[in-house]
Every structure is written in structure tokens, then in C-alpha cells.
Image (cartoon, rainbow, N blue to C red; front, side, top):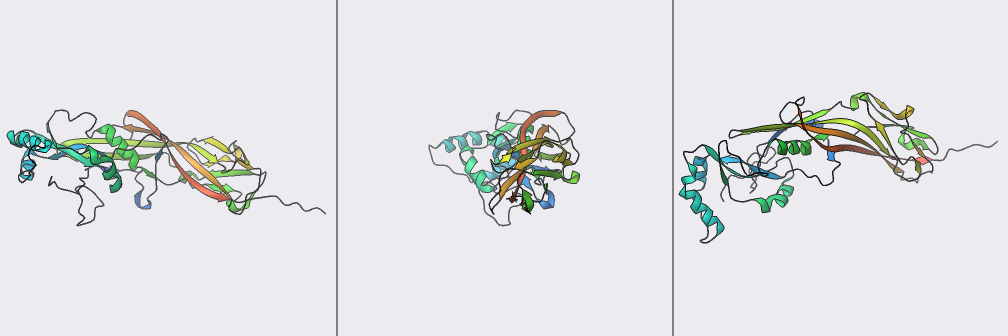
Amino acid sequence: MAMQRGAGREDASAGNESDVIWSQVTVSGTGTGGAGGGAPLTSRDTTWVPPVCWLQPLHTPEEFAELMADERAHSGSAQSDWLADIRAVDYHQGEDGHWWGTVFNQHLPEEEARGECAILRGNEVWVETGADPPAGEAVGPEMLAEVAYAATRLPPPQATLRPPPDAQRVNLDVHVALAADALPGRVTTTASMDHLGVRFAATVVAVPRELRVEAGTEYADPAVCEYRLDGSEVDTAGADCNVTYRRASDEAGYPLRVELTWDVHWTASADPDGAVAEVLPDGFTASEQLVTVREIQTVVR
């Protein structure tokens, strides 16, 4: 159908032709990465995927009548029956409500939206003001919370190693430190929509909970350790979370991985301090450094 395409995409290039209708959801907050970007907050639940499309109001009855004025369908097709039905009620002109249709999450890559939602697109549906749209398909606070989760960008944990990565030694502890200013108390991302009288917002709140250090080899003791965060500067020097390499590496080194686990919940408003609506799957951010481990050389006299 000859609908407006490409609407609502903040980064859409001028003149770009597209058959995708983008949503009118905006995201804001400390978790959006800012000018420095950042890496996505990744869910621990490997089965979790963000919503790629949903139903939202698109047109007033009068707008829809104008849009559909030149529409044609093949006789006997399902669309021809639908067109006949909506024309019989004059597109609900003069009534209080909107025509709803499928839109795509503009905070995801276009190829992902196309691939996942193509088979879900159908004809627009009429929804009276105050009536419930089709259950499970329409935009709402819970769906916006998932949009906010997927849109959250965080800097990877910048860890300082002692000894430095290129000076590790067999049988010496590796101490991991994160500066206090590199460890945010929490980050928040709000997804909101205010379009054609439909207003929703949801805020995702993520708080760092645990540091995880993975040695990158089985020849370490321990190969993995975890350090519970208390909100202050992190330094494993006085804790049990210190990796000790038991075998020297080759010149390529071992990929030591530092990972932060985040507690995540959402509120059904733009207020991050609002009541917790639901706990979301843990998230994580990570960084990796190659460490070169050598034997300690002893001089015998």
C-alpha cells in the first residue's frame, strides 16, 4: 500500500527510499552512550531478543481515507475484502480513534527489522480511543522497557593490571583494578513515545554488581574468579579474585577477559526512581587484554 515510508527514523538519510515504517520511540538517559558511543548491554539470557516491530497508531481516520483513496486490490484477494469492509464504514471518519499499523524499531539495524518483521506485517486495524489494541502486538510500557534495554550503551570496563599485560610472570598474582570514576553507580535509559495521543514511557536501570576475571587459559589458578562490587573503587589486590598463571604463554599471549555483570530492572515511567515494575535479565559488558606470561629467570652464581 502507498503509505508514508521511512518516517520517524532519526538517522535516515535524506532522499533514502524505504518501504519500512519506523516507530516514533525516542531513547534518552545516561545509558545511551553519548558522543563516545559504547558497547551494547548484552543480556545473560541468550534466548532474549529485543522487539523489532509492533503496532502503534499511524493515521487519523481522515488521513487514512486520503491515503487509501487510490488503493486498488485484485478481485477475490484477502485485501480486496478488507478494502471493501473499511470503505463500507467510510474509514471511520468522524469517529474518535486511529488506524494502527506495524512499525519497526528504529534503534535496530534496518536489515534486522526487515528480516524479522516482514511476515508480521498486515493490514491496518481500527482502534477506538479508550479501546485495547490487539493484545501482545501493540506498543506499551513493557515493550518500551525492552527497547530501552536493547538501546543501552555502556563503556567497556577499563581494567588496569598489575603487573602490566606485557610483564606477567609465572606464579605471580595478577591484580585487577578499576578506578572509581570508571565504575558508574548506575546507568539509566528511558524509551518513550508520545504520538497521536498514545503516551508511554519506561526506564531501564542498570547497576554494576560483580567483576568477573577470566584468565584465558586452563593453565591458571583460578581460571575464573569473581569479585562482588560494593560501589567503591575496585582493586582485587587484597581479595581472593587474583589470577595466577602457572605456565608461560607464547608470544601471542593469553586473552585475559574482564567482565562486569549488571543488575537490571525497569520502571513504567520516565522516572528511574519509580517503582520497580519487573526485574530484567542480568546484563554484562566486557573487555579483553592480551597478557604475555614469562618464566621468572633465576641467576645461579
